[in-house]
Image (cartoon, rainbow, N blue to C red; front, side):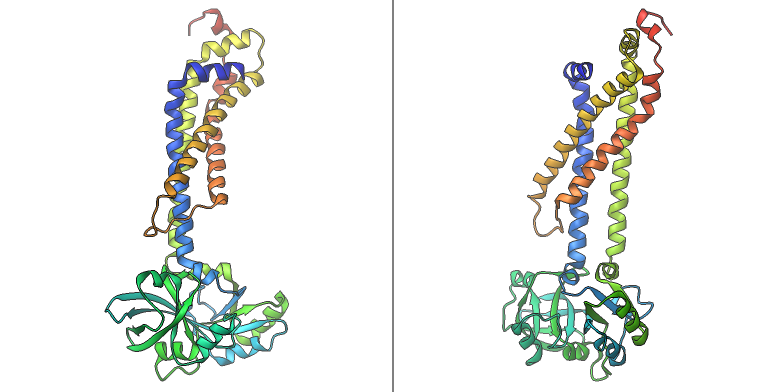
Length: 361
């Protein structure tokens, strides 16, 4: 590594140039990671926060609550299943107007007062009492207060705000809870016929769930799998992943091109090393070690800058940096950069020592 470090010191201008490019790619990749995580959180945090492990939906619903319609007959086998807690769950999107005429978007979740989804006495009381709605904490920041009247557009039903629940959203819309009966009235009017969207499940082993699934005529999936049913979730995730792949591919090409040019410029030096008895392995380790130093330093600087920028992002943009995705992006960037340099490996190992003696080609 002596020659590699010496080259880094004396050729620092060119290394700073390529390091800056790699650092910018690391910056963009880390920021995109934060945006992707933020979009996921903004799309499914409300569903993720519910204390359920599985959802039973109508077959063919493809994880979408809007495509699933179940009735009490579908719920009964689940309530009788050993070791399984089951609760009906209705999910729909509504617009609501405040007393001041401001429009709010709501993802309304309806469930029964005795549901395990309502974990405390206050929540059960809100669901069992007079018709009302419990909204997420985000709406408090928009001026909504307990006792305010919200008019649900469509059915034109006015509901009082009974309280606030944990922060969360579904389909990028703030969540709100009401009783299943009230949810049915909002969606179906006087012709509800006991309908709801899904059965929320917790506990039970796989065999018990499979048997109940067959008896109920439902299709059960894990909560994580149901995230795909959130509007825009799959498209957003795929788009962000594709952009990150392109950035990483560009980084690999840039590093590969730089290493190739740098190897050509060092041809006589490599030839001298071989003439003095250096093996291909030694020369290769020297070259790759030099590149690894540049990659790691530039990637760390770019990721660190992204973390600093992320602290300045306001609440208007769904942005969330987590250690796991950031570290993964950095490691992948370094690995792909080293992989891109493999294009020049053959050039390093095929340099003829005769070059060091002054032969011209």
